[in-house]
Length: 142
Image 1 (cartoon, helix red, strand yellow):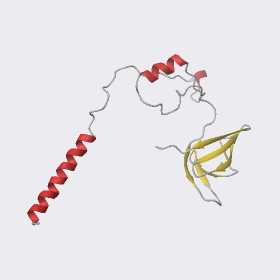
Image 2 (cartoon, rainbow, N blue to C red; image 1 turned 180 degrees about the vertical axis):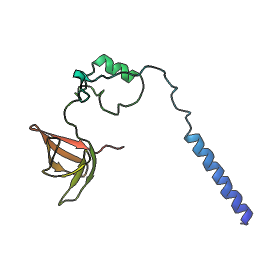
Image 3 (cartoon, rainbow, N blue to C red; image 1 turned 60 degrees about the vertical axis):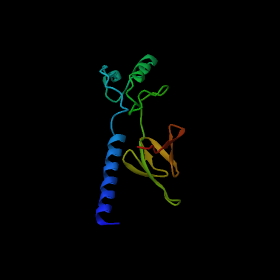
Image 4 (tube, one colour; image 1 turned 90 degrees about the vertical axis):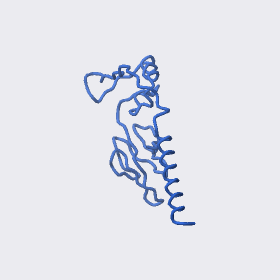
C-alpha cells in the first residue's frame, strides 16, 4: 500500500466520521420552541424557605407544557416540599469506615446532618434516621 493510498483512506474515514457526528448530534429530533408562559411557584407565608403545595390541576398543567423533568422535585405528586433536605453527592465505601458526602459535608456512621443521624452506609445508598423514621437516600445519575 502506498503512502498516497493510505492518506486517501485516512482522510476518507475522517470525513465520514465528521459527517456521521454532524448528522447524529444535530437537532433534527428536537421539539419546536413553545412560547407558553412559565408557571409560577410562589413562596408560602412570605418566606423564601417555604414552598406552597401545588394542586393536581397545576401539576397537570406544568407537565403538559412539555418542559421535561422537574429539577427541583416540586412537582412530584404526594410529596410535600418543606423541611430539611439531604443531597447525597457521593459515597466512598470501605468495609471498615464508609463515608458519604451529603449537602457538601463528609459524614460517617453515627454523624448528624440536618437533624438526621447516619445509620448505615452501603455502596449505593445511605440510611438516615430523622424524627424516629428511617429512610434511605441514593446516589442519582447526573
